[in-house]
Length: 165
Image (cartoon, rainbow, N blue to C red; front, top):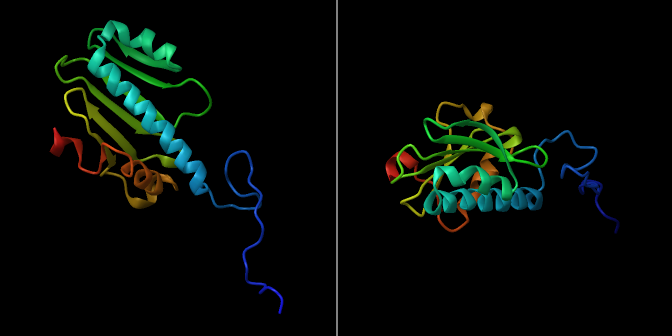
């Protein structure tokens, strides 16, 4: 007996991780997992900088690590960065306004828009939040799955930052 014609067609991946011939903007799980792993490493990097560096050391350290400065407010001791290569998944904001509780906030972009990662230098956890003012139809098509992947990593939690800190 032959295969049923209802079996899914063979899919070829494009460089973007989207199956060719597909209008579905959702990525394959392996591609999304790799991006989440990178975002987790980037967030951990900024968390380490928040604990170990001063504001004056932030910019040179971030450049060496492969980030580009988006903007800086030296008076407020705040700076925003993005990954230098390709389209960023997150824009990272680092605030040394309170040197005892340096804050790192990462806001998602593109197909995962609607997520916010928050950490503070005095707490090991990283909150993975969905922006509460956005409706589910305003989230990026991969935001929910990306959040679930991040929550599977050590020290990434679903508790909102305001409740945790």
